[in-house]
Image 1 (spheres, helix red, strand yellow):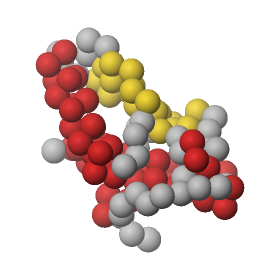
Image 2 (tube, one colour):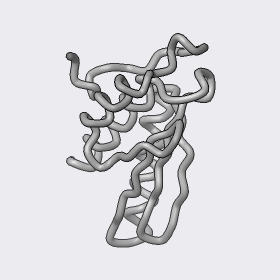
Image 3 (cartoon, rainbow, N blue to C red):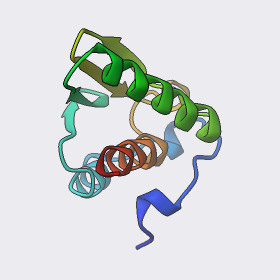
Image 4 (cartoon, rainbow, N blue to C red):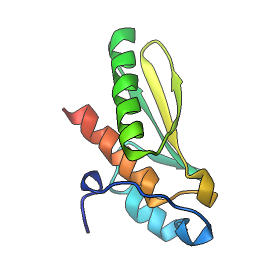
Length: 109
């Protein structure tokens, strides 16, 4: 299996692209810190201050732009909650896990 951080998102539409529960569980195991919430995955990232939080949001925006896959984000003083789902398939797709893995890698730098 290819490391998710080395993959890129691609357009996905329809039920055929939506992951089944077993497929989603396998990919979720590859993105530590993320949890499944219904038809989405999410994670809350913590920071020392507001400046670091916003720096992360800017880096997240760059990843979203490059991958053309955009999360819902909720920004607080020292936190950022990120939620991925693929609206065009009505649930989770591989794109959600690719972007989650890239954000995990970003936090490891």
